[in-house]
Amino acid sequence: MTTAPCRCTWADSSPLMATYHDEEWGVPERDSRKLWEKLVLDSFQAGLSWAIILRKREGFRAAFAQFDPEAVARFTPADVDRLMQDPDIVRSRAKIEATIGNAQAYLAMQAEGVDFSTWLWGLVGGTPIKGNGVVLTQSPLSADISKALKQRGFKFVGAVTIYAWMQAVGMLDDHSERCFRYQPG
Image: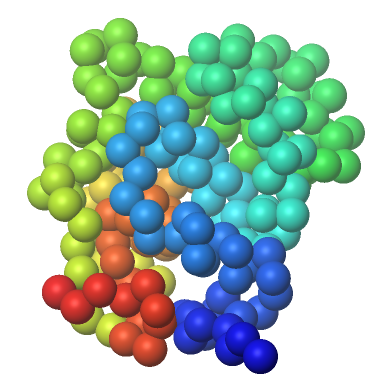
């Protein structure tokens, strides 16, 4: 009989969450487009459980042109109306419109010669920050990154959303000490 590995407590809530934890959560992501995709998903998660977003992730990919910022930036009010009818995503007009605006902000950064990944990782010093075992909902750093994103035109990127996103993309390593993915720092 094989025993399951010890995980962060939240990851034991379902097989979907366990797989996400084991394969994605906390793994440093440095691809700009994947960072933007995860930011979109975390923005939609605000006020909901992450499990809902994970179950709908493929629906989000289909709805938002495989998270191609150039395609999403060209979405029209008709696209917003279409997405409001799509049961495979979270149907929030404000979040859908924010995603379109965030694609435009992402592209504006590119047009300025600013690489999204390089810029974001620069805000955390270029390497993952090791948590101290106390998992917060936000931090002064997540508030600073939230403010920096908002100054660039991003929406639905509050400090709590950014903290969760930082954990998801590996900028912040908050695996518990009992977790098999924990790396002493």
